[in-house]
Image (cartoon, rainbow, N blue to C red; front, top):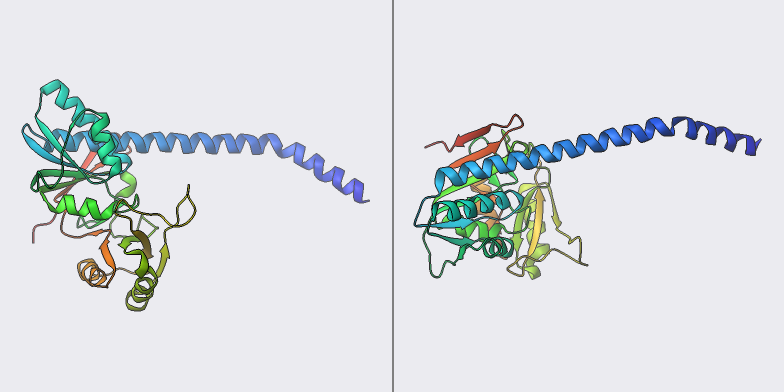
Length: 271
C-alpha cells in the first residue's frame, strides 16, 4: 500500500509538471518584462532631468543609486556632444566611480561648496515631494550635497511615486547612526514613534552594512503617517544619529518615467 501511494503521487507529479514549468516560465517572462519597463522608465526620467536642468559652466551634484547611472550617461553624452564645461560633485563612492568612468571632471565640496543643481534618485516620493532616501546607504552625503545645491531635482520610475510615504516603499526610513549608539537609538525611536527598527545587515559580508562614513544604518518601519518635518528633526536630535533618509522641503521638482513611455513631472508646493 505504501509503495502504491508513492507511485500515485509520482504519477500526479509527472502529470502536472509541464503545466507548472510553463507557469514558472510565464512568471519569469512577466518579471523580466516588468524589470525592462522599470529600467526604461528610469532612463526617461534621468534624461529629462539632465536635459532640462544642466547647462554649460555649472557645478552638478551627482546622486547615487540605479537611476543616477542613466543621468551620468546622459550628462557625459551632452558634455561630449555640446562641449560643455561641467564639474561634478559626488554623493558616494559609487557616484565618484561613475564620474571617473565617464571621464567627467571630479570635484568636492571643499573646492565647490555651492552647486548649481543636484540630481538624485529616491526610494519613494510623496505628493508634497517629501522623500525617503537611503535604500543604498548613501543618505548622509546625498543630503549634504542636495543641501548645497541651488536646485535639487529628483528622478525615479513610476514605482516610486506615492500619495503618502509608506504606500510604495515598505522597507522603512533609513537612519545613519554612530555604531556604538545603534541600540539606544533603536529603543528611543520605537518608544517615541512606534513601529519597528532593524539594524541593516550586509548581503555579501558578515555583519551589518557599513556606510561610506563608517557608520551603521537603521531601518525604521513606521506604522502610521507622521508630520515628517517634526519627526525628522526629533530623530536627528537623538544623540548618535548622523542623519535620516527623510528629505523634507528639499526637492523642487521630481521626474517620473512612466509605464507608457511618458515622463510625469511634479513641482513642490510653494507655501
